Length: 219
Image: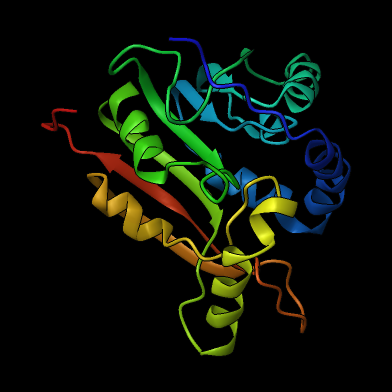
């Protein structure tokens, strides 16, 4: 079956323009920490414009970067040429990865799971393509844990305009819960706010960490 075509041309161009400012504002350091100690073959899902590529450590031997949006995929292809490790950019969606079972040592999702159509399906695919014992590194904005006002605002936005203006983005997803539900064991988790400062946005709550597909797990 052919891959679903994903086209968000306006959002893709806006995101590509915003990304350098986000990197300068602290996201580059977050990406660097996210990828530390990765090794072997890696699949990166939702590569966007390729902002993560520059941060892969030398122990990574090959990255397959999956990006469904044509404009962002072209940007990622340019970024791949400057990457410190071999990166191949391919078309595909998170819910239908173009790879066999258990072929990757690691997987990376960075600011992706907020916008996939089917979170459970995407995580099931990541579990499928990871070898037993393989690591999933994640960096995502998520549902607010505390308070009343911000969670209420997130739910209201997700139910109305936010997914339409944000390329399918949702502000109120419980990513850590979805990871556990998908059969991953989270062994490192940091919660933080981005951007830092007094202004709290609907997308401010973030998590970053690592999860593992159990060595004896059968996908």
